[in-house]
Image 1 (spheres, rainbow, N blue to C red):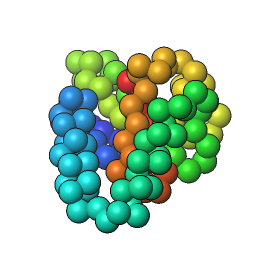
Image 2: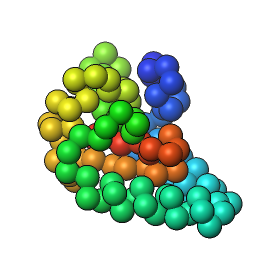
Image 3: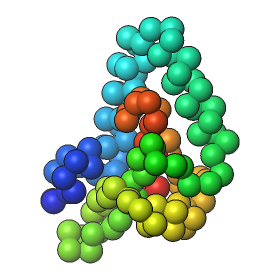
Length: 112
């Protein structure tokens, strides 16, 4: 199953498997972080919890789209430019996932 280059998703990887891999990466990252890095991560997470508007230039935003050519497999796409705000607004807060241990120091959002 094809995926988008540099999306972080591996070929054939489901959305669930992707987020499981992210959770493992997060655990490893947190286990080795120093106190300053930990404070920065916690600050990013607090800011993300209050995030009502589309994030600025620093944070990456990805949207998951169903690929009908591959029997409905979900594929992770990086959102750029004006599409970022539109896709953000199309997803409710419960459909937005923030990961503070990727794309440091800004973090990444997944819209799914």
